[in-house]
Amino acid sequence: MNQDLTSRGGRDRGQTAQDFAVGIGLFLLAVAFVFAFVPQVVSPYDVGVGASESAQADRAASLIVGNLSVEDRPNELHASRTTTYFNGADVDALRNRTGLPFTARINVTVRNVASDDLVWSGGAMHREGRATAAATRIVRTNEPGTCDPACRMTVRVW
Image 1 (cartoon, one colour):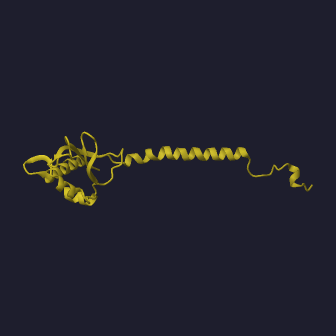
Image 2 (cartoon, one colour):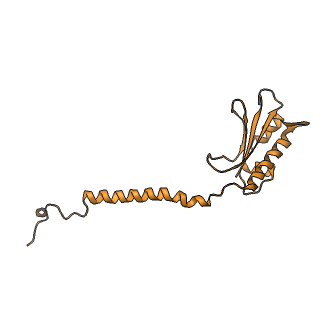
Image 3 (cartoon, helix red, strand yellow):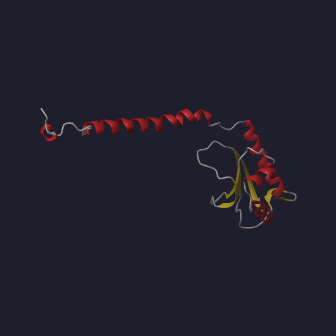
């Protein structure tokens, strides 16, 4: 009547190896489903760029080139003024200098056309794959060797 637990062959344990495997398998499927489904649910709320951002990027690029150009030489940047402009050019400073709204993020990079070397940069860090409005200008500098033959200035706004 009163049986010893060892006489049952250890069959009264709560979980078998098969139960564990099925449970872990279902858990991993649920986690995979969440990681696959959540980005698609959130993506409609990731607003792309519109006409206003494109206009802001174009206006900012025109202002930067216009303010930093050598007198009577359009699209030729004054090297020392440009260096001063980009030193300490955080997001707020660039936003204020270009008249962008408080909510806008801006990134300005100047790269050599021939070597793709970075010459100047400032503003917010741009994540690859993020939708941005961009305006590009081909510029030169009054300092030989900086932008030979020219540089590409890209202004990104998002």
